[in-house]
Length: 242
Image (tube, rainbow, N blue to C red; front, side, top):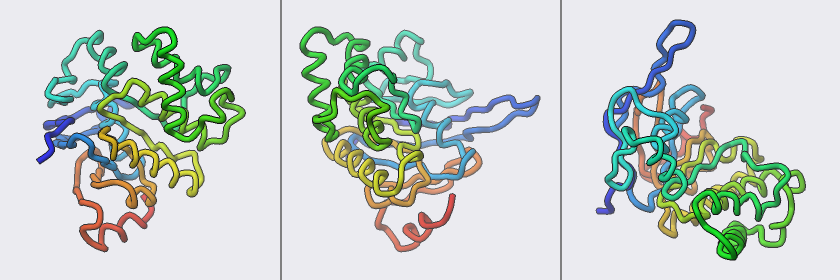
């Protein structure tokens, strides 16, 4: 059996809202194997983004633990978390989060420089991943010169530039049309097939054609898991709004 790259154990996270505790994540336990492509599915407010943030070390749980490659990240120092995010965890956001005055190549290059890459190696690796996501001819274009799908491809290239074992994507197709979204899913599937573990939060039904497992969340809790293709019921459930 493929070992778990991500191990979440009894994790909970609450926030105070107008004096009331909001339980964003409730006692979640989850394993994700090396090279697996997993979708977190649930309605807005179900806890998907909070769980991704906890896995990525962008937030800390109130209780429970998160391990990445056997290392506990939930109690790691801020300095160690910074290193993990530079080298071991790539993050893709719904909003692309590209620097508007920098070209696609430069946006990717910044992530490499922050991780300690220097000289020609920056441009060589930036060109390599931009080619990988199918944007070689447009590497010198700035974000405003690119379509939404192209901008998301740049964001993915930036996230995988340092060859992280884990890629986290939060609603990666939320601002894209269905055809472009399908292309992004295909790209994420290809990245996973090459060995990167991918965890994506989404309610897009197109994802079912590309992921290996669906993890359902509701009111902060994990309420079910399904291997894709196990039954027609799973496919039907994904066609419902949510």
